[in-house]
Length: 353
Image (cartoon, rainbow, N blue to C red; front, side, top):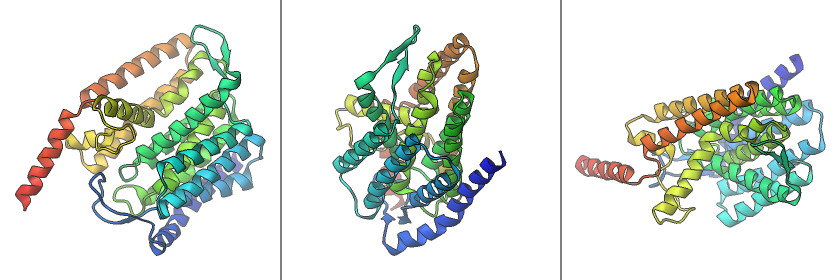
C-alpha cells in the first residue's frame, strides 16, 4: 500500500514539475496552437504538454511495476501514439497517417495479449470471438483514442474527464480482481492530475494530440485488461459507461454530421461543450458541468460492479435513459439551435464594431 502511494505521488509530482519544462520546450520549438474559427481560445498557446504525462507515466511504471507481456504491449503501443502526437503538434500529420499509426499501435498491443477475447452474452454465457478478436479490439482502441482527442476542446476538459475515467477504471478493475491493472490506471490518473494544475482554465499549456491520443490509447487498453476479462453480464457495459462522455460526444457527432449531410470527419462547433456554452455557461462552468456528468457515470459504473446482475441492469437502463434525455434537452443532434447562437455571436461582433 505504501509503495503504491509512493508511485502515485511520484507520477503526480513528475508531471506537476515537468510540465513547465515542457512548456518552455514547446515555445522554443514553436509547438503553438493558434486561434481559429473552430477554436475557443483567443491567444496563441503552447501545446505538447501531453509529453509530460507520457514521460511521468512511463518513468513510474518502468521503475515500480512488475513488467508483463501485456504491460509491454501498452507501453510500446503508447510510445507509437506519443511519437505521432509529437509530430502532429510540431508539424501536423494527415488524418490518414494518424489512423495508420493508431492501428499499428493497436496491433502491437494485441500481439502482446491486450485484446478482447470474448464478450458476455446478455442472455447468459459468453461468445468466444476467435479471429473477430482483432477487429473488435482495433475498433475499440482506435475509437476511444480518437474520442478522447475530439473532446479536447476546452481548458482542462480532456485531462479532467480522462482522470475521472482512469480512477474509475482503476476502482472497478480492483473490484473485478485485477489489482495490478487497477494500479496502472491510478498511475495514469495521477500523471494527468499533475498536468491538470497547468491545464485547467485559464490554461498555460495544452496537452495537444500528444496527450489526448496517448490518454485515449491507454484508457482503451487498460479497460480491455481490467474490465473485459470478467464473465459477468454487466462487465460488457462497464467500459462504455466509464468512458461515456467521449463515446457519446463522438457517436452523436458522427450521427449529427451524417444527418446534416456533412462529412463525418469534418470539424464543427456542435460538440457537447459547445452546446453548453451556447446555453450561456462560462468556460469554467462548462468544464465543471461535464466533470459532474463524468462523475455520475463513473459512480453508476462502480455501483453496477458491486450490485447484483438484475440491479446492475436496472441501473444501466436508468443511466442510459438519463443520458438520452440530456442529449435531447441539449439538442446535440440538432443544428438549428447552434446556428442561431452563431448568428447571435456574429451580430454581437458586428454591433461591437
